[in-house]
Image 1 (cartoon, rainbow, N blue to C red):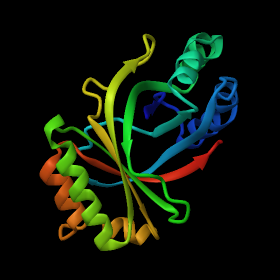
Image 2 (image 1 turned 45 degrees about the vertical axis):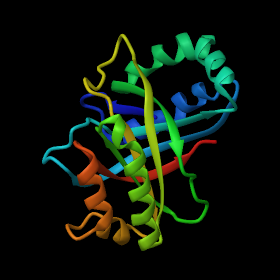
Image 3 (image 1 turned 180 degrees about the horizontal axis):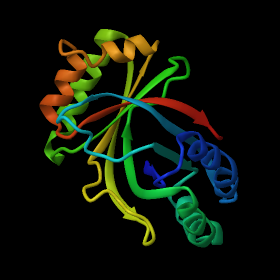
Length: 209
């Protein structure tokens, strides 16, 4: 998961166009990519602490065939030189979170919400158990991504306190996504109980590969 903040003064449409166009084509020059998704932030549905704790216009999900493939891609000319040189054209901020994932992305539910958060490591198992229970009660699908390492770019701003993890929720409708963060929602209760600085972003997904 990589959190992106668009360059100041850049319109959202221009940011998305460059990200999905020249930059994505450049990124696809890395070998070993099995899945590449742009999670474009449409709106903030809910925050646990007033103002959003993160400066996010998009979140990249980039999957490789294995850990060796990821290391080789990052060490390649594309990963080490060309991409970092290209990023300041459209980005202000870049924060990489390498994650471990519990749960799987469904194939049918079209609406996605991403929730970066901060939490203590000891809450991970309890959080995952209660998230599964909340999702089962509503018919939604869920995954928990836990950050195991982070990185930043020298030439770009980065989140001073990167997310501890990311909750992914898939629902049947945008209305259902709003309902999932009403004060009476069990999902909202679980997130509030076990995390801090949670921000629920309604996502417009673009599958590049």
